[in-house]
Length: 163
Image 1 (spheres, rainbow, N blue to C red):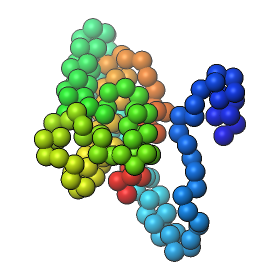
Image 2 (image 1 turned 90 degrees about the horizontal axis):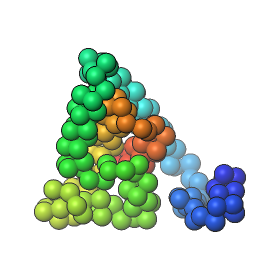
Image 3 (image 1 turned 90 degrees about the vertical axis):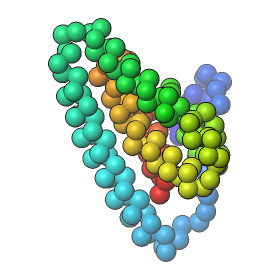
């Protein structure tokens, strides 16, 4: 909160995400919090293991930076063609979820042909959470510049929305 306040004062920027309490705490919701914690814990294990395995696939290209970049770029490009919200750091996609407009994620995808069925949107959001791990790892293992902070926020937001 302090970082957001300083950013707003010094850089005169709007807040990237707006955190507001949506309701009053209810003890009856605790089982759902526990289930969400289990699901996100499993997702974090998936994230680290999938990233480790994908990085291992790039080891043969360690001494060939151009080939490594070509393989990573082609794989990433294919994923972005199938899942356009993967392009960029992902803050836009998270803001769409936050604003209650998840159907907009399908707008430029190949699934837009099928409309914005609730189950289709939910499945697409779940797939985005899983595939973002591969997209992030293709970028980093391919020699691209990036980290795991924004992608982990993307994955967490999508898993939370999916739940």
